[in-house]
Image (cartoon, rainbow, N blue to C red; front, side, top):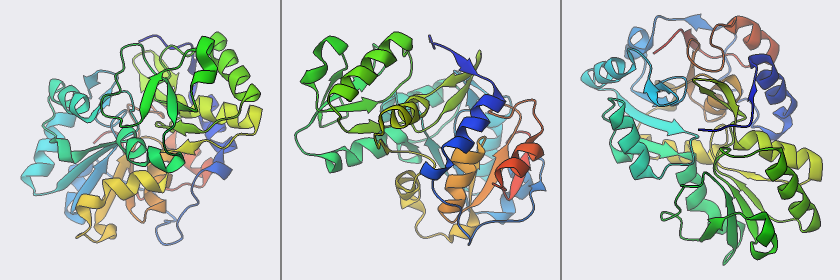
Length: 304
């Protein structure tokens, strides 16, 4: 997949810190003062009834499963743990996402997968009825699961759409961004962001994701995008819908990013587990970033 450029860990972390005012506040109910180390999810499995799992950096990197992740998921199932995948990947329909996980060896059922795309699609009508959306998406992305009118955004027909839908950063480059800025400056419109992530771990580095460009537009033009996905409450509302019978204190959010997975999980009242070896903080001193951000997960492990 072509991405215009990638960020370093420090560049990504500093940008997350810069946009903290737009992120949820930490919940006083679930803040912890000390991060405890564990060897993996099986080490703490008896502490929880369910796990909400990020995808990139936890289950997979790019299109490959992380070594041991498939086996860990099966072991958690064998112990009767309930599982939900909560991903900010917005290019895939639910069916495509499930097929993708299965191609990597995971056995997630459709009802166990919640994507930020799903979260956005369910709420798109709240931004206005009858709107025609111009999607920033990969060329082969389809929109058959979206009831609203959606077409690939074309700067030559910028006035033909009533809002901008950010699904994917594949193909976003300086030229496209300049044209998008010009169109929104000339005629401000709603911006729906179906992937709030600033970056995602790929085989080639940390790719800039839709959230990165949405915050750029917000800073540059004074617009207020609507974000759907982690760390925002709408994502956790949908992810926890099937776990309503459980005590939130017995549910763990597992992710690789402090500002999305951990902060979002804490704001939703969940316990949190930071995974360090294959995601945003791969090869880094995690404790240093925890100290700098003040976002303290309940547990940390190298991988699940």
